[in-house]
Amino acid sequence: MASDSEPLDPIAAWRWMLLAHSRSLRAIERDLAARGAIPLTWYDVLLELHGADGPLRMQELGSRVVLSRTRVSRLVGELEGEGLVRRKPDPSDGRSTLVSLTASGARALRKAAPAYLSGIEQHFTSHLTKGQQRSIAAGLKQVVDAHQTETETRQ
Image (cartoon, rainbow, N blue to C red; front, side):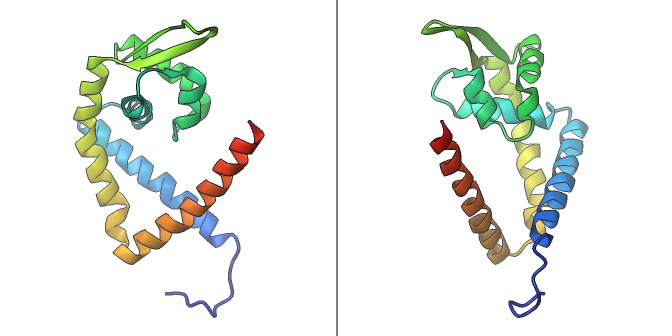
């Protein structure tokens, strides 16, 4: 284990975060596929819709999803084609579209949740001590919070 007195590689944390993210996600994606569950990118969209207080505008959904922000419109189209979400024009703004979770979407989310949660444990948290998990969570939260403030300032 590296000590605080060792030289700091300014890119090391970034590189390891990207590699851990990529490899953990691929492993969880394989687990979901093996169990016949929805893809992880679909899960991400459905999870955000499930956690929302009602329908979300496409733009808001795009800002909330984590895994595929650039493909949200296409993902919503795929999900709608499978009957997992519903799109409708926003009555308060004709230029916007609202997206909501259907009952089938909620069922697909519930079916995938156990594989997703066990995948997080198996492919990520089981490799870290509780202290490491707390430190990583606290450090990464600081980065997210810094960018959240930056984003809010620009809007």
